[in-house]
Image (cartoon, rainbow, N blue to C red; front, side, top):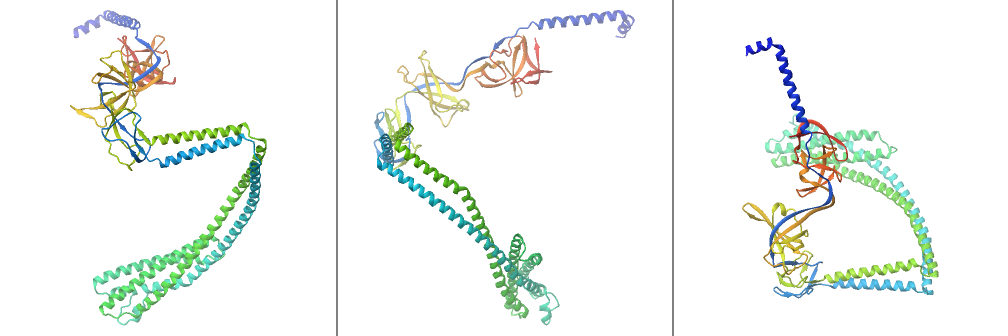
Length: 624
């Protein structure tokens, strides 16, 4: 190898000549290859408009028997039965009859309404008589009198409402005065009550008066005087509750009392109302504290009595004073609540009166205007009576007659639905109802078996999931090559049949027409139409390429392929509907045709999206 490099190094001219020949050969080969690839021809087709039908095909056999469930069109109670199981019936024969008492009344009413409309029309066509004219004039006079009374009534009601509003405002003013008085009365007692509650728990009265008792607060003395641990734990719970209630009541009382001192009866109503609410809450908490301290003292007395120990005189005094304070707080609570309700009631009375006044301001002019229009209409009617019926009035009455006739026909149809008839000749099966039974539109009265022929086919679970009742089907027969008839789906198995791991469902197809050449047992091919579109843009499905969630079609533009993103619609796997991206007559390249294919690569080019916008793609044409 070293010799070769030494040789090339010594013969530099030869090395340069070899490199030039090599580069020239590569350029010549690439040029020939490019010229060859530029002559490639594509297999194309044009976008066309047409109809597309998507269907599912299945095969099976013709069956001679068919069974139809007989159901009523309306709900009702059975009154007459004309059938039994195994009975042959003819088409149109009444099977059962529902109770018709209500529908007969409706029928009579509809007939009466029609007759009245015809009479009205007849009267309109005749000349007006003096009695009818007098009635119209009396009606006008009555309307005028009613308007006069209405105006007077409106004025009186408005005045009464204004007076009610003023009275409610006066009462509200007094209610605020009463509320402040009740608050002041409450604060005549609340300071003494709070002091007494504090004394019961935290004073030194018992230790000061009782011989042999250590100097301590009442609550500690009462607790320490209980030697039995079980009683002591129980009493301590009562004492803790009393102390907690006291601190809560005292805190509220202090804040409440500060607000009371800063308020007088001339303060703003909202301030008095807020003070009333606060005083009511404070009194409730004081009442709760009184109760908890009474419970505490009662529990202590109960223990001392059970043990035969002496009851401290102060405890007895405390019980007496707390009991009297219970009555005081309850009285204050009642007064404060009453004042609060009075304020709310009078405020609501004022609002109610104001709403009534607003409603009167809105509705009274409307009612008067309506009454005035009624008077004008009655005057116009009198003029019309004198002139006679107009063509429009006659037409209106004739239309009313037509409407009543239509209503009668509708009731007659419902009347006919009370009789349930056989839809074809057949045999009754599965009937088990009795007179008086109630049935609905979903009730199966019986099965009607007929010799009408049907097609029975089998579909797999994926195909069956797309089938619905009443879908159209086209039937063809191996034995009758020239015969093709239409039908529709009349029954789909609710439960599939599993065989070798494959689930299948039976489908029954009824014939639109009967043909004597079709025999039971014949093989049949059914094509069931599940979707279709008309006058749509269609292309072969093979022309569509997928790039992720996008679909691309190559369009030949001036001899060059151009990728375009499209939106597809219906497809039968051979032909596909294009909803966006292409126009009628566009020339597209079929996928895999010719010698060119569009594949994914790293080269970025632009392709046109539906609507004319452009998108960056990663596509290029590779020639082979």
